[in-house]
Structure formats: structure tokens, C-alpha cells
Image 1 (cartoon, rainbow, N blue to C red):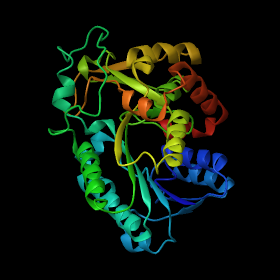
Image 2: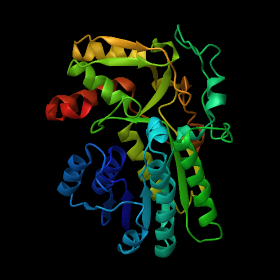
Image 3: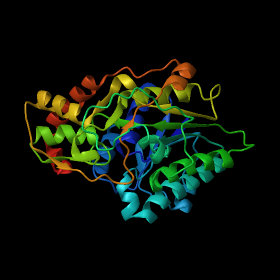
Image 4: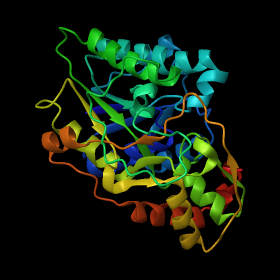
Length: 342
């Protein structure tokens, strides 16, 4: 079996590649990554230790992708996921996330390959998600218990990034229509863990820990600047495990869309995350307040894992405390990466 992982030198792609290399025998795994993102060269070096080759190709260049050897499965992890980048560099976001998917799908058709597509929880309506919170100046801890299912509204605005993801989902269904090929679409929430070079609007968990460990400045941004916005977090190890299960069962379970995240038990506010980081690092840092909220930001997201749990008998096994300990251990062992969190 030959597997290509696009975005294979990113946080998620590299961890999946190494995990599958360890777990699957007689499988050839390759990566496709243009190495533009911070930390990608470090992840490429990790892949090389496991004899995983990276093709340094821009996903917009179909002729180069077409020239690659034939693959049986493509795991598409390639994306520009930062919401704010959508405003500053719309062409790059559109071309990477949507045209990139189109190019990968053409490769799938050419190779007769299946695809596992990593979509996003950001496909859902900003307006509807905001409506879950009565007052967007969130002064007190949220007490919402609602979990977002696959049927939550996707028709209205969700950011350019969200649009490219939902459009890619539709594109997969169109391209594979009447083809004897299989797809799985996974709408992941916040993923975190070791080897994540996080930033404010993407990968905030590792960023929060690093800023505390290295005593750097941080800010609560938006919703009054109180730090009470909530997300559920999933450990990268749990992501790798569900991908492996899906690969093994793709002949029986396919052409489905799943919400996958940490769930209610692994949801946390920025304020509570701060408390945990203070305890783990024994450092207390100044956190500024930026009260203005981006029109693209949402106050709350918690994943409903019911469908993926029922289908695969899978659930996230690693709690937030374990995730934080694992990430902190990695940071302490790799203090040379401090520069990536400035």
C-alpha cells in the first residue's frame, strides 16, 4: 500500500505519517510539502529518520503532482488554517486550500486512489455559533453544554478559510460521484500536542504553554478580553488513532463526514488554560486584554463525537491535562524552538 500525505511536514501531517509508519507494515508513506511554514524543516528531518520521503512541491502545481508515482490513498492535511490570514492573503488561502484539493483529487482519479480529507470545524456558521452566547462580552465563565453535530448550519458565512473547506468537501463528493473510489471527510476541531509550533490564531495551546515556559507576553483577544471563550481540544495521538482505524475500515465505512474533537470533557476556556499553564510551568506572566473581537471569531465550539464514536467505537482517550504535560515535556526537551513562539 502506498500513502501520500499532503502537508506532511506540518504538525498534523508529520505526526500522522510517523504514527502510520510505526503501526502499518509493508506500507510506503511519502509526504508532499513546500516547507513554507515555520517548523516544517524540523518536521521534514523527523520524517527522514523514519525513511519517509518529502516531495518539496507547491500543491498548486498540478503537473508536478501528476508526475509523482502512483498512490493507493491520499491523506490531505494541506491547508492554510489561520482565519486572519484569509483577510490578508485571500489568494494564497484560496489557491492552497481549494485549488490544492482540486489538484489532489485529479491525482486521486488518475491513480484510482481513495482519499481521507482533513476538513475543519470552521465550516460552520459564524452567526449561528455566536448565537449560542447571549452576550459576546463574556465576563463570566460560559455554562453552555451544547455540542456541535455534523448537521449544524454551514450555509452562511464561516470565513474564507471555512468556505474553502466546505467547498473542498463538496468538490470531493462531485469528483468521486459514480467513481469506484472512496472518501472520508473529517471535520476536526482544535488539535494540539508535541511538535506544534503554535501561534495566536492557530495552535494556541502549544503557544500558551510556550509563552508561560519562556516567560513571554500574551493577550486575551476579543470577547471583552476576559479569556472566557471556549474550545474543545483533541490530542494529536487521538487524531492519529482514528485515522488508522479509518484506513483499516475504509472498504466498509466510506463516503461519510465526521465531526471529530475533544468533546465536552476536553473543553476549556483560555482563562482556565492560563491557570493550568501557570501551575505546570510555575511561571506567572502578564496577559494583556484586547477587547475588540474579530468578525470571524467565535466564542464557543465543542464537538459532538456521537457519529464517529458509534461508527468506529472510537473516542478521545487523552485528557487535556495529559496533553499539556506531553507538550510541556516536548518544549523542555527542545528549548531551541523558543524562537518559533516569539
